[in-house]
Image 1: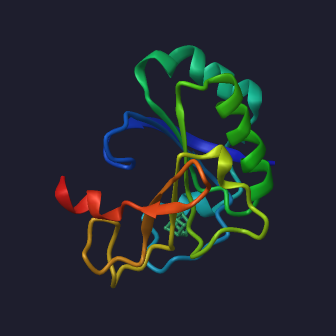
Image 2: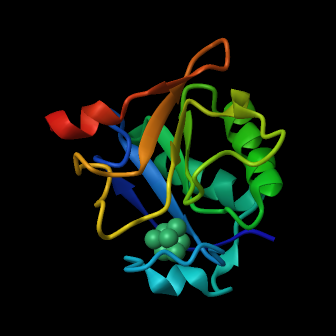
Length: 155
Ligand code: SF4
């Protein structure tokens, strides 16, 4: 079961989008210097279709993107919820911030417009750093992943 700790409307996680970012807990990654260690705990409320519907009832008119922040412990369940957003809110883009270096096996990227990959490495820095190991990809219609990380350097 996916659970979330909190959420916020943010402007910088996905360039040129107003994003409802939902912070998912039970993160299996153990990044040194983790900015949100509480997200490694199995805490929070269930994130499911009903919860997403209630978020959208409140915020769909104010956002352009819905971003799952984490969820690496249950990528297939995350994929189901991403498809739910895609089908029921076609005007809202769908994003995923994963802390893994690569996609899970047989992961369907068609449900997403954006996917960020890469753990947090305090020596290399965040997406805004020139040396970052993290990358943000825009998913193209043919499924190709276009690296758009450079957009973080031009803010
Ligand atoms: S992926 Fe994010 S929440 Fe998880 S350990 Fe790394 S920095 Fe912390």
